[in-house]
Image 1 (spheres, rainbow over the protein chains, first blue to last red):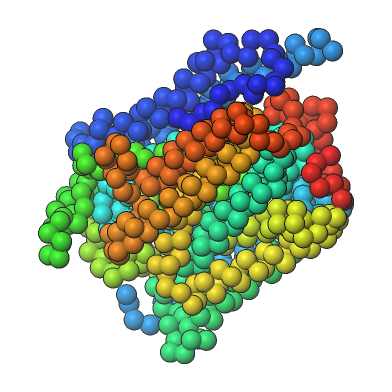
Image 2 (spheres, each protein chain N blue to C red):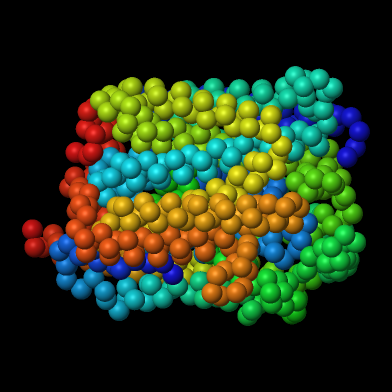
Length: 92
Length: 541
């Protein structure tokens, strides 16, 4: 992907921006890219689902799957931001 | 096409059109602020939209009438290749999740209305901001034109607008256009936001009915795909190649993947997407939307199935764009055809309105205020923007009426390639200040030139120019030209940034702070609803 380096050089570093849950969130967001861009993994006709070739129903099935992954990432990021805000509040 | 006018369908169509017209004008009073004479109100709906309104607005904005006609049309024409729209819309949401909340925060903190506003503030360069604004305008205009083409397709199949003289022929389109222009002018972004409810409700109903009713009539999906497979296998006598295929063949997979990825990266940088995103009231509204917007992707996938159904139903049209409207007219009872056509027609009005507002905002903020009248007051800005939105629409109308449809389609294709060239400055800028402004500008210029030239040089399925996939240098597979141009763009920007830094070429001043990118509604300095940008403040506050 095209993600540029995360930290601008002049930024004041805050404590522990990269935590394990945040990495999990990143992985959740990255999985659909692997699945969808690897076209060879799903370019076939069978097995069909109610008569629809694999190629089509498999990609449509990834809509709810990637949505689920995004929801997980959302929950993690929101929790992370709240924790950060609370921390900043204590310092202030 | 049946001869003559389909009276019942036309009546239903006109009914829904009247309903949304009334809604469009009523919208100017909906959630209205006390002081509405500024760009934040007219152009961003007061930046007050919550999760659901934003969802309808973005859905109405991104999944346009053209999408509804073009995606199944592409399937109808060539099969699997057209289905890349589904992975494309799957991939765009993780991307949105990653970068747009940052844009929202910095825009709220500094009162940015357009993405070019942000680039100017971040890199201290009006030149770079102008380049991006022009790119956005160039890419949006043909997109608006295509919405009108969508309405035209529906009117064609309905049998109206086929009169012998040019005035009668184009009269229905002129009326639709006039109404659209009038309520956008008076209500701003609130009009499409309100109409989007009707549009999406109609579209969902039509798709769900179509996806159940038509396969039953045609004997099930198995039968539909068998027939489509036969049709695709038939060789074109002129080229000796089959018409298409049911799965993406080994030599087409790079193209499929790069088209999906490149389009996903571009989608949310279109000015109209940015406008809709900035009109939301908090960071989490955007994030929540990335979890509910995929419902539209599912719908798009189902819609694509209609392309196969059109083949199985034996729909024969010269112009592929008419395949789906024709399928509806052949399959549905007249009254429901009217509902379906109303869905497409209104589906064109919503994005056309948002796009013209976004284009107008770009013009006002990044051309008019930056270069012509730096001391424009907020009232004056809003006035200029309203006029600009009219001009943009008239331009699109002239485009449609005077030029061949393929011109609009070609430009829309180029538009996607062009928008992709704004990624390094915009998305790059959201995460890092490392890039040098002139490096980014040079990268943009190289990407634009290469992309345009390469696209022009590539034959498409139906003509000698404006294809969207060609050989990728060094990889030797066919891929999306826009993505290749983007890679080139990034390389140039990185190399030149290193050169400029080493030689000490002066860089612009960054007016943003790292904490601006994570600020949320309720934080100090981020008002619930932003006060309008103050008069005379040219570069920030």
